[in-house]
Amino acid sequence: MIMGNESRRLLLFVIFLLAIQLRVNPVVGICEHSFIDRNKLYNFSLASPLPSFPHGVLSEDGFYQVAVNETVLWFQLCSGMIFNHDPPGCADCSDCGGPSRCGMECSALVAKSAGGYHVCTTIGQVSSTDVSILDKLNPFKGVIVRMSSSGNEHNCSLSVSILCDSTGAQGPDSIEKLGTCEYATTLRHPSACATIISIHGKGFGWFGTLLIIIICLFGSYMLAGTVYRYFFLGVHGIEAVPNLDFWVSLPHRTQMYVSTLVRQFRGPSASQGGSYSQVNF
Picture 1 (cartoon, rainbow, N blue to C red):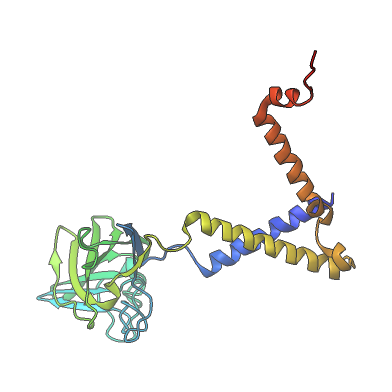
Picture 2: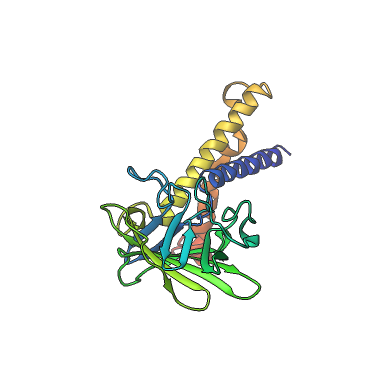
């Protein structure tokens, strides 16, 4: 029964550690991308702050805007758009916030002038954002952020090519129409430069990492169990160590187990032969 209680406490402790791990290191974000190539880990974290760009690749205005001829494109990377000034004046914006909050409930919006009015179409949602490598043969070139939106008439999308430029940010300056409701644009930004970690011949490897985790969990279990028995159960001295009888008997158990293995490998003939002595006639 004691062993069962200790096992349950250990299980709860492991679940607690996993919860902390998930809280500190959440699942890969919308604008996070990483891959391994030739013993190198390439990691792109577009929304991570940089010295000159505290919001990463996100526009500090709350949106990017490109106007070419009679077409206007608004978009935001890694998040929804926020308009504190110059909101889109669209005749219909039902799927992106409505007339009063147009552009506030999507990540990309395109408007075309028709009869003196802007007819807007949602072409990107935050939930439909995907990040991929711009050129697999040259990971240093940058990434593509693609966002899409499914409408009643067309499936629309916006592909933003973000080129790696460590010197600063530039663009977007142009709009390219790829299909009926598919658009593309390009900008340059330091956030599109990969962080590279060499994993060849360095670190502990998966076995070493697993061993360290097991040792840490074991040490935490012993510490937590000792503290619990000392303060809550009133057990003092060396008896406060959880499952003390098991740990004391562990060397003897190990010796017996090793001896059994040795006898099995030597076979019965070796053990029987050692029980007889030579008789001279």
